[in-house]
Structure formats: C-alpha cells, structure tokens
Image (spheres, rainbow, N blue to C red):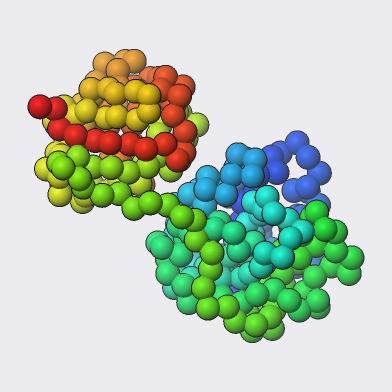
Length: 271
C-alpha cells in the first residue's frame, strides 16, 4: 500500500473537458489503483502548448502535498521516439510526462532528485496506441507509482531532462529585456523578469516606466496592485508568481496589445 499522500494523482493536459480522453485516463488510473484520489490540476492547457503547460505545472505543483503524483500530458509529438519519463523532485513530488520540456519550470523550482525512462511493459496497457500514450503508457505508470512501486522498476535512469529554450532576462544599457512566457485568463501577460533584475536596473515600484513589445510601446505605472490605476489603464507589477506582468485594470492586456508567449519585452524608466 502506498503512502497516503502518494495516492493523490493530479492531471495536467490539453485535452479539455468535452472529449473522452480524460475519462479514459481516469478509468485506467482507477482500475489499477482504486484508492487513487484524482484531482484536475488543469485540463485546459492551450492545445499543444508545452510552454503554457510547463508554466501552469511549475507554479502550482509546489503547493501540493509531498508524494503527489502528477500525470502530465501535453504531447504534440506523441508516437515519436521522445522519451516518456518519471521525475522525482527534491520536494518529493513525482511527475509522469513526455520528456519534451514540460518539466522545465518544475525542475528549476523544485530541483531533480531522480529520473527514469518508462520502458517496462509490465507498467503499460497490453495494447498501445501510437496516438494515445497518455492512456496506454503514462496513466498506467502513474497508477502503479501511486500504488507504491519504486521508480527503479519502471526503467533505466536518465541523467537529465529536455528543457525549453527560454532566453534569460538581462540588463542592457539601463533597460531590462525579457520575454512574455504566459498569458492568463484575465489577459495578464506574465514575463520571465523577476523583481531582482528590475532592481538591478534601478526600476522600482511607484515609478512610471516605458514598456515596449512589438509593435507597441506604452507608458505605465509600475505599481503594487491592479487598482493602483484607474479602470482600463495599463500597469506593470510583480504578480503572485514573483515575475513582472503587464496588465490592464478591469481589462485584457493581451487583447489590447496583441501580445503572446514568446514576445520580447523591454522595460525602462521614464526619462
């Protein structure tokens, strides 16, 4: 019998809530481990968007109990020779996922304790579809892991994971340059720029700043809350992720500026 917290299986996928894919996955989990406590981390990752899935996973997993098993299925290259892996983090969370960059933020925030490649057919369904490894390989592996099977039984150790190639923010000529890495449901555009690098460029909360992203350049207040500016006004702040985000109070910044993950951002103090 597995440890109690290891009975939690949190599902992250881009399958949505209208298809039969998620119910099939849950059926596999419960058939192999009837005691599993299944929760939906997110079923609404934008389709085939590995970066968005990595962000959602990386900034939510740390709040789950130790031992939680995360079944992560955002897999545009399903059926190819990419690895399917289980990663145990230093926080004692377990991630069952395709090795395609989906664990980038988790690895950075939680560290890596151990990685194995899933190769043991004992922990897969008898018949394996080329287009649904989430059901036939990843879900069974998560279920057996939840039952307490040790990682070593699933396959050989792996030294490292694939990481998304996200350019690090930098200070250049008094400006901070970074990238938008996520857009939330409110239209807030979250960048990879942390507060420390802004301070390095002497960009402080309470000052007016210039924010540039193709094809827009906008003056806005670098503030602490959304309501520090009037409705429909743009603003910048450090959000709950610890990163700088571009927002519109009671509005949608992403729609206003037609920006998206991967867009360049340049921040400077108003002169």
